Image 1 (tube, helix red, strand yellow):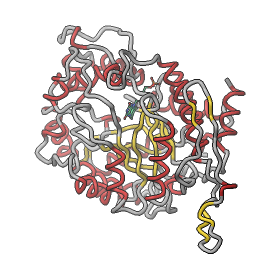
Image 2: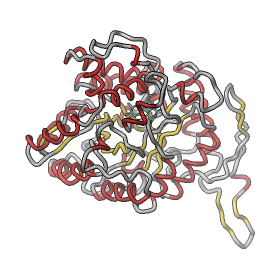
Image 3: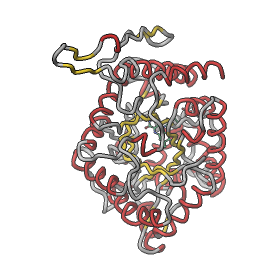
Length: 453
Ligand SMILES: Cc1cc2nc3c(=O)[nH]c(=O)nc-3n(C[C@H](O)[C@H](O)[C@H](O)COP(=O)(O)O)c2cc1C
């Protein structure tokens, strides 16, 4: 059963983010300051957002012309990113209910370190941690981790499967009541309730146990955004939350139906996976004001900034194609979902590559531009049409875009009974309506997966 109310996540960039957004007069360039993120966290929590999410990348992309220039010069999406886990700790310190999600790559990290980081964050925030599991898709990332080229997509997802299996075993390595703290006996932690995991697999050999007790949420909330067949299957098996991006309501509905079917095939309750498409709404006091804001933002997008980000998302060197012609069909090693989206836009609007760059950098994903009532109408339509369980909201410029949305659109959604007035619980799982996993639950999921494969 879909939830009767939508879930809202905020897509925050620990760097300039949308090309053009950082040049907008209302934008504050506070990306290197803890206070900047803490102010955004308070804004989101006051509006009862489910969670704040940080994307991440482990390189400055050089996919456009083999150089980082177009990223750096234009303040494009990959030009600068600070470590999201540190940002989340600072946000957690000034909030009490907001979920806190960071992206960490299974391709370039080790399960022990990641399981430990998220268990620690979950304890420090009383159960609000979430991990966006990515497999990474840039050659430039591989080159920062002792490799000349990246593993194939299949290898990356195989490694990711085993990575999650090990992480689950580590989180379960302390039974829930293992920390006894009996000062008389003394019995700090009960050795009979803390277990080595002795994992020996294809990619990882990990003895365990973890040196952090089982997280308050059991396992942190797992987020994924796979778009390839392999990626969607991985997401349907492991995720509590799925992020996606779509150029139309129709493609969002198809994706939603497909993922819920895949989840069912893996023996999971389809309602236990929340699908949140990424949107970039622009809201104003009147439709004309919202359109003016969008136009002003769009004007500031340098076509090469957008193309540089698209080249990095597709992992295709777009500098080799003529700027004033349409992008031909290309083989896409990177994000197939973004490619589907740009093919849809190119064909629908007949765009040249230059125009596509501007459009990709400045598009209002989902097309929600207007008054709070109009934007809420659009969100309600997607939600009730069965295209999603809520949204991941990007701000067209930071932090003002979040303030506009929370001050105007959220009350409109609340008035319609489509969004909560108060948090339902304390942990992120409780607010997402997800049960706390029993120890060993992932072990069952692994054996179910193996049976389905
Ligand atoms: C909304 C959204 C956010 C994403 N954030 C990241 C990210 O921060 N880091 C990253 O490496 N990949 C990110 N991705 C890419 C996905 O993790 C995934 O690799 C991509 O959608 C391609 O799917 P595939 O791996 O199945 O080919 C994101 C994708 C979407 C749709």
